[in-house]
Picture: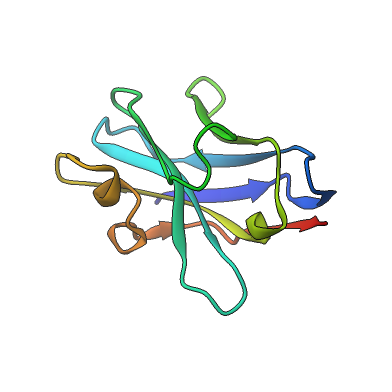
Length: 129
């Protein structure tokens, strides 16, 4: 049973940084993709950054490229999201999610929330101006 537990959210001022962590279990298949998604109040859940467990390929939403970095520590069974230069529009509940996906060919496919069936409980990130 895949389990995902996020931590590291909080409140920061614009321009600040946060690092989110997601402790996971039962993800041993190299076909898994694991990543970060967010949902702001009144908006749909969107993909932020995803990494392929088997090969390390990464996918980012255009809105976070150059500011956020996703990384995976298999020895610690932990996924990270380093978020720099945070902006008020980054305010959202951030979720960790994982699933096996058919061969991913596009970032849109990897970042699509509907492709994931295993979700953590979320951690809140609030960025003030």
